[in-house]
Amino acid sequence: MAKTSSVEKNNRRRKMVAGAAAKRKALKAIIMTQSLPMEDRFRAQLKLSGMPRNTSKTRVRNRCEITGRPRAFYRKLGMSRIALRDLGSLGLIPGLVKSSW
Image (cartoon, rainbow, N blue to C red; front, side, top):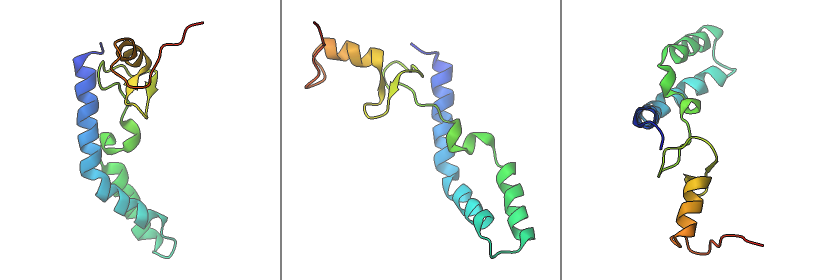
């Protein structure tokens, strides 16, 4: 199990990203528009850099929904390899059979 504080910190980051997504997208659109004057684009760049770091999407870490483990994460399933193996061994995931030879 991961530390509860790490999992909660990541959940707070997810909420911050969702709340600031529209504003960040608008600022990035202004920055990328070549037809606008350089001063407006530079002001938008300063506003974007002045926003909290945790509003950036890249700060969010994928974690297992069951254990909170940050590594060996399967995006399609939303869990780590260890949780997947445990649930598969219990027969809780349809179609998953433990390999043996």
